[in-house]
Amino acid sequence: MTAQATLWRSLVGLGFLAAAPTLWPALAQSVAPAPEAPTGRVAKSIGTATKDMVAAANPLAAQAGREILAAGGSAVDAAVAVQLVLNLVEPQSSGIGGGAFMVLWDGKDMTTLDGRETAPAAAKPERFLGPDGKPMKFYDAVVGGRSVGVPGTVRLLETAHKRWGKLPWKQVIEPAIRLSEEGFTISPRLNGLLTQEKYLQNDPVARAYFYDAEGKPKAVGTVLRNPAFAKTLRSIAEKGSDAFYTGEVAEDIVATVTGHATNPGDVTLDDLKSYKVLERDAVCGSYRVYKICGMGPPSSGQIAVQQIMSVLETRDMASLKPGPEAVHWIAEAGRLAFADRGLYVADPAFVSVPVKGLTDPGYLKSRAALVNPDKSMGKAKPGDPPFQKTFLWGASDGIEFGTSHMSIVDRNGNAVSMTTTIEDGFGARLMTKSGFLLNNELTDFSFATVEDGKPVANRVEAGKRPRSSMAPTIVLDSNNKLYAVVGSPGGSLIINYVAKTLVGLLDWKLDPQVAADLPNVGSRNGPTELEAGTEAEGWKAALEAKGHEVKLIDQNSGIHAIVVTPAGLVGGADSRREGVAIGNN
Image (tube, rainbow, N blue to C red):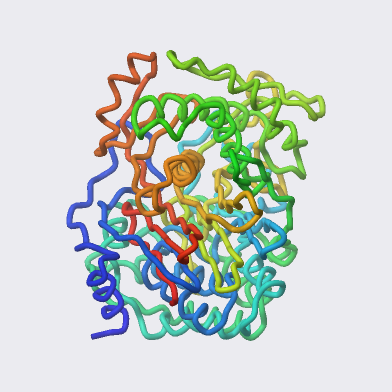
């Protein structure tokens, strides 16, 4: 039996994972596609540990992080190991061909690092407009080089490791090299997503790697080896991130992007060489006795989460059980947050984002006052926050899709919350000869350049970072001590996933596994969205009685949460995906 099979079997035996699902429901055709298709639920038990913990989207990635923590590594050391293994075992969601946001707590300071992809220097606002001047169909824009932004993940990992790493760089990369060479078995989830995928096998490199000779996805249990990725990682281990942003790997990226037969992109060697990770101010706000911190622009995630929580703070959420009354408030708060997000948030190097005003307590109280306890407001309008410069932008909803998330706490109480992405499932459907998939992050920009005669803040521009909804979150208690590490994949639904989980943890005092598994609910300033196939379906009539337009949709979150308790660490990994929360005692 392989080491991987032993790990999976032990996790089943310990109750972390139930038998793998056998049904892989297709996406509903009546709604916009989910970031990644659902592949069934995997029942899980709570994770506990006394020293340290990793909650990540695949057991092999979590195990790599635990191995590094056991060797005395920091939370950042573990994050490097987890991300590089995720590139192998969860390639549809993240990897070194994409970008990430990292939030770090070192016991004193909260730091946020922006490793978001950037538009190449040749990018123009009209990038995703067709010959008729109208926005392209989504997958016409996604598939190929046009959608590929300059990746940021490798430089982000190196930047964080140089500052907070304890173990040698080569050591934290070794688990992924080992797995690349020895191989790992295709999981039920990866097989299920490949089965539903329409575009990936058109790329010859990806087809040779993920599909058999008949063009069918390789079966569950098939051993995948990726010697090309191992070679890339060995080069990065020896030379640092420069081995990715210059030289053979960079040339491979450029050739892959620009060489697409029907939809080429324009990333250059200079674009790669000049990429920079940016340290940004954390967005922090209060919620009852807690302090909630996360990523600022170009992510809209933490601003929107804080806005939602500030509205909910005006209600006694602890007295409400999960049900239609709680959903009413969560959805109405979401409408207000998404209305502001659509108008104000974009890359702060290009747009003056009024972060202070959008999170101002007085402003948020005025927004909360707009919520009628008995009736939905329908479509919310953006507010007029203080501390903003005068400008006129056109509002834009934008399209955002898939990601992965990891939550990590080391034995010294340092924490990492990192959300990482290649955007849509399997990204641009381009695989480099260096062994990794490329992102389609540029489709996170608004396709339309003008709305109501006004320029859209999140339009494509050279060197710009697209707006995101990623919301890696760290919660401190009333004594400014670490309390929780939370985050999720899920495109623009991330905001509602994280808010729901925070209510579960902070108001309802649920353990993180139960909080993660609660039905997903909320509004993105459209219909009130309830998770199909859950008890939330039973809340539809009560919400409609309050005037809500209700839609039942797949909401395939991947919440990973860790809570610090007097007895140690308690973790949860969303049952909708295959992750686990494990640690050392």
